[in-house]
Length: 387
Image (cartoon, rainbow, N blue to C red; front, side):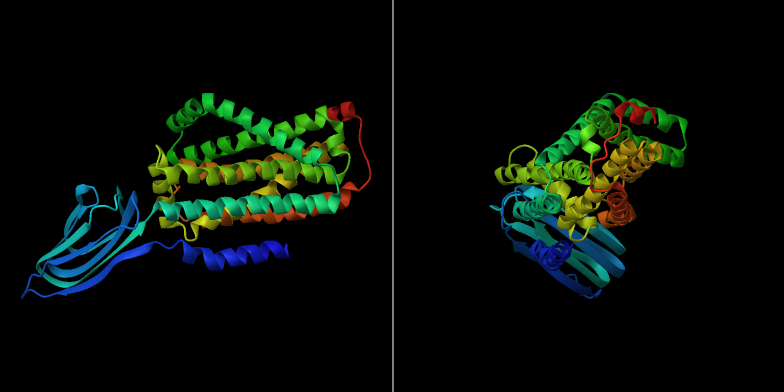
């Protein structure tokens, strides 16, 4: 645990400074009616396929202010005219090339008052670094979970791989179901229910798919392979296998996206744009996914242990507790998706909502370890299913 705390502390301290966008222009002006000064600025971008982010603010008492941008492969990048008090925030332009100079012309007309403009650039290198940090930390967290389990339990990696297979089967079945039925079901709910009801019921529906298929797959494996619940170390291995397989898939996918961004092939612009949009609303965006995986892996372990404990002890109530836990987590994710909150609110608020589930999972894992016992306690599988 101390290793996790140290790793996250270093990242929180160092990463935000490393991925901060480069400032291109920062200027503040004060206008008087006696003169109309035209302000002209120029600069070049550090890389090809770079985005410019503009923040502009005006507190003019009278008159208008025009902000014009051109170059970088376009005749006109942007052209804004406004008066009085206004504020443009996180306006994105691009992708732009680094071969043509960027021109910025600011023209006040009969203006009085203050205004300011700030331009920054977001490059492919920034996106690559963000994805690399995020993906690398996810992989490290996953490996630490696996090493910790192996060191404490000295159990066969067979149970870890079975846990990964449990996750894969559950997710594959969930994907197939969602691919064919999610759209018509959600459309029907949207037509039948008011907005609030649709968001609540639709989110619960999305979350329940995880309970049905992922927790259901764990139960299926427990029924088919009775040895998976023979002792607590195997149960922990199943949970860590499921949680870290998902995490490694996400982490390695992020690292793999670096190839697309660096090569500039089709889809790379969308990746860069997505990272920029997310970073607008989420400080230290590179750390969000690693923190989320840390929380979710704990939830995977606790829920799988509850399912296996339920079968081992013939107590269905623990299965339903596991079902409720994973359903609740993905209900949160479903609400964020349906409500259109992605890239509009800080993702840290979502992680804060997930935090209580992760804390509860720690206590659940401790309880299971205490009550499971270290010896072999296989039950008759027929009695388990009937119970």
